[in-house]
Length: 331
Length: 284
Image (cartoon, rainbow over the protein chains, first blue to last red):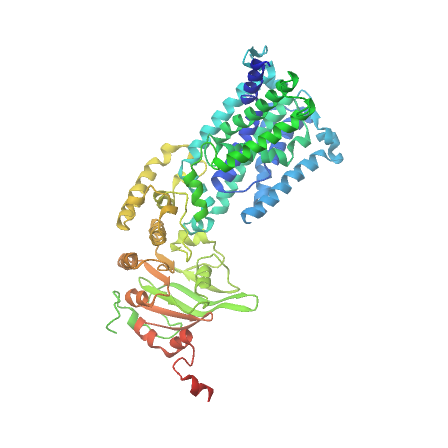
C-alpha cells in the first residue's frame, strides 16, 4: 500500500478546487439558511448562472473575462430578484419548493436544444474562456511535493480561490456581527416580532437572497474556470444538497463552518476512496468483498454512514453549540 | 367611582356609551369589518382611544379582540373601514411602518427571539440604526458609537425590568413571565407613543404580575397610551382608566371599569342571558 500517495491525493482534495467551490456555495447558503432562515434548495441554480455567465460572454460574444465576471454578478442579482419578489412572502417550506423548481428551470433551459447555439445544449460549453485568468498565472509549473500535487492551472485556481474565500468570509464575519446581522438572525427566529419592531422584513430577506445568491454565482465562476467547461448536468439538485451537507457538517450560522465543512467533506470522500482503492489493488481487501468497480459507490455509502453518525452524535456540526440547537425544540 | 384610580381624570368626561367621542383621541377607527368566509369576526362602527390613558379591551373568547388588534397594527387587512393614528390614516400601511409611526404591539403568544440573547433582543428594538443598513454594516466605525448609545439605553430598561442578570442568556432560557417582560421592554426600545399589549398577563405568576402592572402604570406616567387585551378582571380593575367590551365582533359597552362591570349587557355577554334564572323556572 502506498500511503504517501493516499495522503497526497487526500490533502490535494482537501485544499483543492472542489473544496473551494463547495465552501463558496455553502457560504451563500449560510447567509440564506444559517443566518436568515431562508430554506433555499436552489443554490445549484445560482452556481449555474455564474458558470454560464463567465463562459457565454467570452465564447459567444468575444467579451473580456473580467467583464464576464461582472455580468455573472449582475445576473445573479437579477435572478435573486426574480426569485424573491413572488416567493419571499411565502412561508419557509413553500420557498424550499419554489427554489428547487428555480434551479431545475435554470438547468433545463440551459440544456434545451432551443439555446444550442449559445449555451451548447446538454453538452454545455467547452473552450478556453479562462485564458485571460490563466495568463496571469506565475506558477505555470504547478506544485509536486510528496504530500501535495497540483498542475499549473489548478494551483492558480487554488491560490486565488482560497484568497477569495478568505475575503468573502471576512466580510461575512463583519456583516453578521453588525446590527444588520442581528436583524437577519432575528428574522430567522420570528418574522412577525421583527416587523412589530419597525423593520422591513421583506427588504432584509431580499438582501439575504441576493448576497447568498451572488456568492453562489462566484462558486460557479470557480467551477467553470477550473474545468474550462460548463456542463448543465453538473448543476443538479445533488450539488445543492452536498452544499447543505458541507454547511451542516461545519455548523449552520457559524462563519467558518463552510470552509471547514468543505475541507472535511472532500477529505472524507477522497480518503475513503483512496484507502479502498489501495486496499483492493494490493489485495488487502478481498475481491469477493469489494471489487475495483464498486469503490466509487461504496465511498458514498461510507460517507453517508459517517454523516448519519455525525447527525446522531454531533447534530450541531463542528462549530455549532448543542445548547443553542436544543433551544429550537422549545420554540 | 372610588375604586376607579384614573390618574388623568379625563375618563369621567366622556360619555359611557359604545363609540363615544373623546377629548383628545390618539386612535380613531370607523366601520371596521373583517369577515372570514361567512363569519364576521370584527364589526366596529366607531371607536376612539383617549391619548395618555390605559384602556382595556375585554370580552369573551372569540369576541374578535385579537383580530381587531391585528387589523389596527397592519398584521391583517379589514374588508372595509378606515382608521387613523395621530391623525394619519393607516389603511394599507404594513406592520413595520405602523410600528415606526409609534404604535408598537406585543403578541398573545410571546414572540421572544429565542436564539438571540436578552440584550440582543433589546438592541434590535431601537429605531433608525445606521448599522442595520446593508451597505453601512461593513463599516463598523460608522455605527459603533450609535450602537453603544443604544446599549446604554437597553441596559437601563433591562435594569428597570429586573432582567439585567439575564442579559447574556438566550431569550429561550427565560421563563414564560420573563419573556412577557422582555417583550414589553423590547417594545419600549422602539420609543412608541402607544403600546398595544395582547394579553400581557397570560401565564404570568402572581409575583411577576404585580411587577408587570407597575410597568404598565409607568408607561402612562410617561405620557404613553396603552391599549391592552386581557382576561384577568382584577388587573383590568386595578390599572385601567377605561374599558371597552367586545362581544361577537362588536363593541357592546365602554366606560369606567366599575360602570362596565355592572352593565347588564356585559354580564350577559360573559355569562349568558339567563345566568341568574333558576333552571326549573326556565323550563316552565
